[in-house]
Image (tube, rainbow, N blue to C red):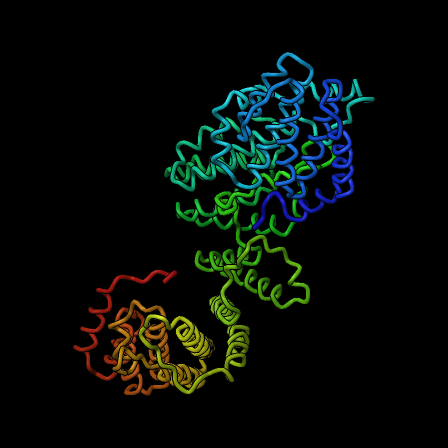
Length: 564
């Protein structure tokens, strides 16, 4: 999945370096080895801040929390306060009150900011929600750390420079909090509550990638609220903010698909595929040198789910299929050939895959889809070559017979193995069917009959076993048409018999043609082509009343769409 992080997160951690973290910790141990004094408090809090930023950037959250607790207790000790409390917000409130209107106040406000970052990084949203109700949060929201950097510069002999500008740090926390909390609200079905928060957050000062996320999530909220046009407007704003916000492109394709706007969907898929092939965008910098990766603060699973996109290859496959189904055949063929070329290239492993899983079909199925596209593009020779690849790759794996058993409890492994065997046989049968159609396109009817016959012979190897009763698939198929494999089997059987029947009719073998066309209609009653050709053959056999009845029955069927 493509997120703000990835390799950039590691680069950010390397920029900090373990030696820097270790140096701050050594300095801190020296400072904390003496009783707390007001003169040294700014120095100590600055070192605590720097050390904690480094620890958080390396995901050392326990160590960072311990430093925060110790620093708060030392401030209270310095002011003569003695609270028997371990609750962090209570300690902060007491410590912050004790240094109000002093130079320490802005430095001390940095401690709850650091804890806030730890909660975000560890996806602890309840403490953040509770924290928002405290007076400390109000102080942070009104602006924190603005004077710390200046104080550090003015008193550089006593106070070390801060590794991350406190104001930028707080702004980063603000927008990341809204993004994560809104994602959780959307996951809980509370999109209407998340939307105003995201719209307000889009105006916060933050890196453009994070601002784009607020527009993206606003669009997702509106999509969930059945406002597709408004959602598209938000996705457009996300792309205007960050041209490489591929998540907005992905969500746009889903909305266009839902609206039935195929041409816009194809255009969005084109741009999305090109964007996925670009180098990953640099990590949004928050203060010159990158110290704390924003991706570290955006680790919630709900957000990851919203920011998931298919791989570049999966997008290319979807694009090819959409082009074919919308009549843009030559364009679809080009995409299928590009996809197969990429899969077979020596460096296809270098193609970036931004998802944790690929939605690509298995390779034989891809070959068959590409073969169909080539056949539609009047390229039967190329189509047959791909079909031959499928047949050659499955020939040794084809079983003598395949028995599809009704699922039983505890037989998942056996079912999976059985499904693989069925799939292998279906691929080979489909390849023979397509070869038969290629020869039909070339008007080589004898070869067409041969290949349709091979498809039929392949399909009769499959039997369905229900409980203890075994029946031929032709008898069981219609009763269990909801089973995907059986449904495909019936369609393949109907199409192959129809193709062979049409080929026989072209060779003037009318009796064989009639037999196959009638068997095709038994397997696939909704087959319009088989019905029309069956009427044609009956007419040529001088059985004109039967022919008229068959045509009438066929024309009364609903017309099948290209997609089906």
